[in-house]
Amino acid sequence: MFMKYVLLSFGFFLVQNVSSFQSHHSMPTRKRRKRVRKKRTRFFGRCPRRAVWVGGIIFALLYMWAFYEFFVSPTGFRWRALYGDADYPAGYEIHGIDISHYQGDINWQLLRNGMIGGCPLRFVMIKATEGADKLDDNFNDNFYNARDHGFIRGAYHFWSNHSSAREQAYYFLKQVHLEDGDLPPVLDVEHKPKDQSVEDFQRDILTWLHIVEDKYHVKPMIYTYYKFKDEYLGAPVFDDYPYWIAHYYVEKVTYKGKWKFWQHTDAGKLPGIKGFVDLNVYNGSFYDLKQMTIGRQKVTW
Image (cartoon, rainbow, N blue to C red; front, side, top):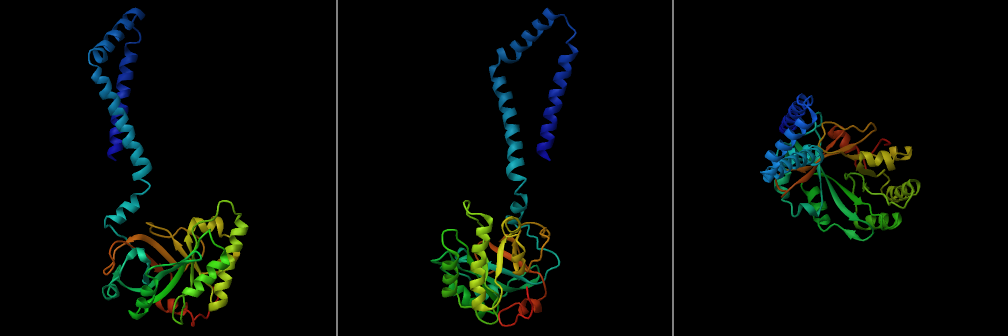
């Protein structure tokens, strides 16, 4: 609002000066030119610093407007989340987090008593692998601590465009050993190679999904942001897989398709974790969540 008032005031100043100029427009040409020269001499000729100040003020106003328009306004929701005005999506009771080595060493005793929006923490998604040769530094500790402290746990693989789908799938299966009661494996895919067609990219993603599904006999989940899914994973075959959507700082998901999990912020704060952590909700009841786990699935997604 401040920027609007400043710009309006500046516009009013210009209008007044234009009106003043027009009121003298009927003067004889020589007389008018003489007065204009005299005014220019008085305003800028004797005080060149005024010209610098006026130009500086105009530049500052334009800079402030551009900064607000292109940097502050588009990220306003994120700024609010980072500075403590945390909002949790209404209508959801099943909350969880996803973690990796970025959260450092977690105090699981404190996290066990953590609450999100007045509800207990129910599930923990854990980064396991990336590409065909990278194991998250904290995966094993996080994976076993999550179950030991009563959380429903899951593990995800971060897709890399620098390794084949088969290499990545088998590397994930080598490093991650899910058990009954765990959530289905997750493929986190957020980037498509620029030089690859959408059809070939989709074929590679399906290769990973099919290999992992053959191992655990459950359909893996797909994690990505909603625009990426619409653009690159919009084929009907992908609707058969549970969808974990990333869509930050909004009151509700605008994605029209079916989804199971919603990562609604990356600026959450919980006891036992230093710094920020991603917060998620499950789209269903706690009973539904448990029925989704390995060994208990009775429905087709």
